Image 1 (tube, one colour):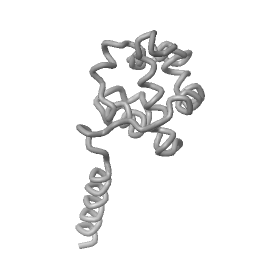
Image 2 (image 1 turned 30 degrees about the vertical axis):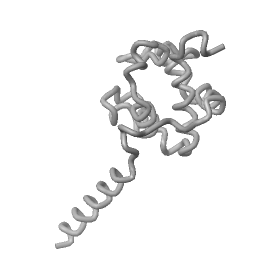
Image 3 (image 1 turned 90 degrees about the vertical axis):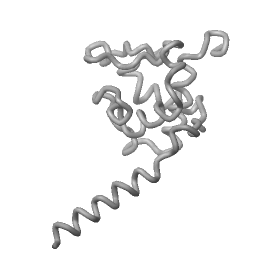
Image 4 (image 1 turned 45 degrees about the vertical axis):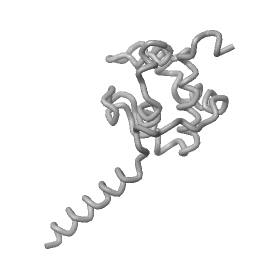
Length: 130
């Protein structure tokens, strides 16, 4: 009986957690790219590199290599929800590498939104970045 209650409780927690996730179709990043750049330089640069190309000091040695966040063509097909969830829950949550860790234990919700906003700027055409 106790085992059944534990399983029921765990199931409810899982369902509740998923219910709190944003709707992928309507989700839009709501962050400050300037603030996100500071966080990116602190936590993300070592793997993703200065420009987001996946060529940071640690990223060069990883297999698979970190996703190229600076590639305009590739990033055009990546939704805001995917960027947000990859940062919050980790790469595996969105079908990417398990080497991309979840940052929700270290970064606040606003920090995650800010980093996501900055990541969007990495693949902006050169004219938009200046």
